[in-house]
Image 1: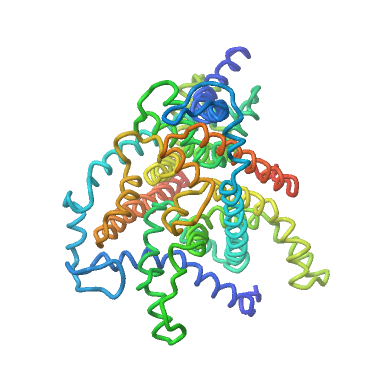
Image 2: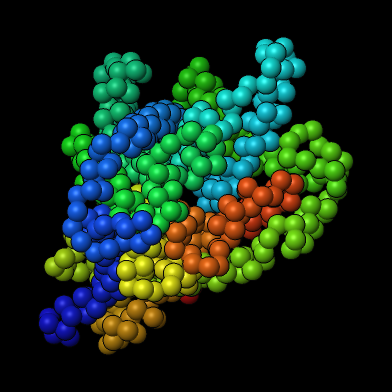
Length: 285
Length: 274
């Protein structure tokens, strides 16, 4: 086979995926960018060029507070999933020696990820509701006199729900990078007299940083655009950019929704780049 | 390892157990509440016991809306997405075994597709269809939205497979005069089949459970997750839990099948056939 036809063949093989990405990722996002400058006449969108949509967002307290609230969710969910994810991955990678058991336990942590998010959230109702299991347990123990109202339909519930849904995205990459650490390095550190904590801080933590970074990128990008959990688990006041966009689409204010989406994308991009500046993940890809 | 008996081990093991409890207890509670009697409610304690009452109610259309139609749509969509994703990602994986211009861009574009906030995909595709004056539908815009989610997963796994792939088999095939097409179908394909089966089922479940990316572009007829989302506001009986139990069992069976099929097939390959 000639070199030229070999090259042609490679391009043909890469073409379908390129096409999917261009059609359903790049083109739609370019359209969001364009429409964010269009005008909204009250019942439809009109092509044009106006900065009104952005002006409306930057001059509105509601939008600002919504973004701040979204950051709050991102920070809380990130911290919680990182802590939980690291401990779980660390336990699996270093304290479960039997390979089959290790894989089995890892699968146990990942199976829920492949089931429906909506149903996983509905499932919290019998536990956290006003007459839920947690409340009746606390009442029976005499720890509280009245059912706790903030367990469900609150910021607490939103964060809990997201941690429950998305911890997989932290566990898997951290577990992966912990498993790649050459065990001889740890033995060497121990032989040279490092304490357990020193070994962790000087050897294991730096080597698992790429896994943490990948997990963090997932969590940040998912939570930034979240609206389902906020809608199902949050009360009426719970606000996030994703929910705001969804509400605006509901009232067909596409240009405004698009402008919000552009800002959301930019903020997310900045956060991802910030993570990539701190940690180099190239070797993991 | 003497580490095993240390205090750290017990603390971490306890934490892990709590985590698994946290992960599974909500699901388990709706699973249990599914088997209530006709007076059943949304919270504990159990009111009566019946193995089939609420499971049966799921199929009564007036109870929970048109769940059966949504199920078939999600099934059809999942299978289509699975087949298309496999074709697209395996073909791209083959391309990535050679150097080509734009490989990096395509790689990062695919990663971007995985991490871009899902609502942007939904909004973007929605706007595209609106501007072009096309009607959104689960099998057009919905399918595209799903592909942006499933293709990156499949592609990354396929890259991993080809990284570990021993090229001497196909070199042997070529030396014996096989064409590229014949080499692929007679040598490469059978060798990667177990992995493809796994990827296929995982892709299917990703599509079957997808919500956010489809939410604005499914058109007139809902997929199953969208239908269930709608039910959360107007169904206040354990029928909702019964439906949750059913679709979760369906997903879990598929996942277990994927892993079982993968390990069975790859174990079979490892046996020398002489």
